[in-house]
Structures are given as C-alpha cells and as structure tokens.
Image 1: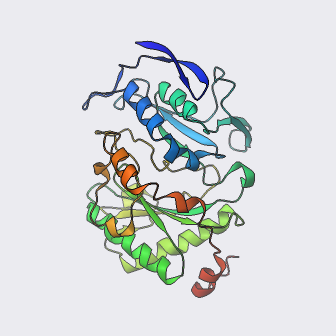
Image 2: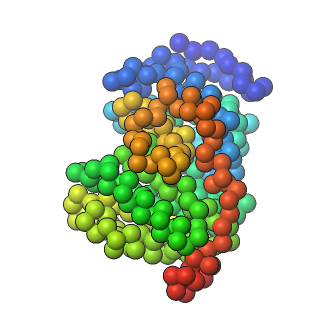
Length: 303
C-alpha cells in the first residue's frame, strides 16, 4: 500500500502503510504517520531549530533498530538540515531539523518511531536551554520509587526558587526539565544537575542512586544527570516509544505525578488529553531561568 500525499504543499510518497510496527497491538506504520501529523502543532515547537537524532525500526519494535544522526542522501531538499563537526567521529554530521508536519510524516514513513532533539538549539549550540534529570528505574524498581524521587527533586528545586516541568519518558521513568537561560555551558549545567542528583540520593539512599555502573545499582532508580552533554539527547515530549501499546512521552502537572503511570498515554489516547490541557510543556521553551541565585544558595562556585 503506497501513494502520493500532499501536506502543507509538500508532495511526497508514502509506502507500506499497512506494515505492522507494534505486533502485539497491530499498530501500523500508517497509524504512526497519522499520529505524528495529528500531533505536529504540539510537537514541532519542541523540535524547531534543534538537531535531531532518530531511532528507526524498519521491521517493527521487536526487531533490529538503529540510530540515525546523519541525514540520508535521499532526504527531500525541502527538509532542513544542520551540519556539525563531531570530534568523536572526526567528520561533519548533517542532522535533520524537523520544522514542518510534512517532515514528521516523511520521517515516520522511514519508520522513525523516536524523536530525540538536542538540549540546545542551532542558534546557541554550545549552551543548553534546560537542565534535565532522567529518573531511570532499574529491574526491580517500583514506579512509586520514581514518583517519590521526582517529588523530592521538585521540593529541592522549589526551595532553590527554580521552576521545573515533569514528563513521562514514555518508557518506565520520568524526565524533569529545568529551563535555563542559554548562557551556560553544558559543563556548568551538568555540574549543577550533579549536585541536585547527589542531594536527592542523600535524602533517599534506599531507592535512589547516581551509580553509573548498571550492575552496581541493584534495585535503585538511577538519577541520571549525565544527559547534560553536548550531543546527548532524551526522547522528545510527544515522541512515541518502541514499547507495547505505543506509549508517548507526555508532560504532566506536578499534581498528577503520583496519580499517573507512563503507559496511560499512547498514540491512541494522547490527543484527547492535548485537546483538554493543551501543551503543558510550552513553558519549557519560554521560562528561562538564571541559575546563579540557586548556586549561591547551595554555596556552589560553579559559575
């Protein structure tokens, strides 16, 4: 099943729309494309101007997948790209930048299930727009542990005078975003996040850890501050995840964190929530905060 489509004046071909990507649920590539077009108005503001790392699952979520950083040669000329020299790869990488609904549809047609934007924008590539804390459960962790840790993170940030915004990872954890002015280096933001994570593990040592070695974490939730690195990414808000049920990374109100589980919001259920609540993550793009007062309270000589 295939055919030409036109989305906002962009004409291109879609193919194999009935290909099943979620075998347990029967969800197809066509349904993935339909979701990303429907959610475009909410998702695109969080992708615009940001290099994008994609995860492709050409044969479904239980088969081989791969990350795509470099744009393919067959990328349509109307899709924006951004070239960046990678010291690790010793070459220029041409990242895709998603700024139109048509781009999302084209990517979904390539079986790109996950969208991972950078934490910084092209305009200030070396200065992140937010600090992030990724609460990543270990085997044996309870989701309630994730919730308890998130609420301590929230209390700590409140005491420091910083606003924070939670979202489900779309998998088993939670992401907490702290919007900041794009004037700090990744190293500065990472050091700040490290201090936060360390303080949280001191309060909740029985369920939280910053131990990097997976085997040494036991059943504790990993409070990951190491995503605050140039080029590292988290799944975007409203990104689909390659898990049963096709869950979607979903912003939450802090009052909801203890009442909601990540599996509740999927490509089939998220749109009604968006109609009711709008984009709860919109402030993350606008609510720029200065970290110096918080660092002063903590007695940190970071800046």
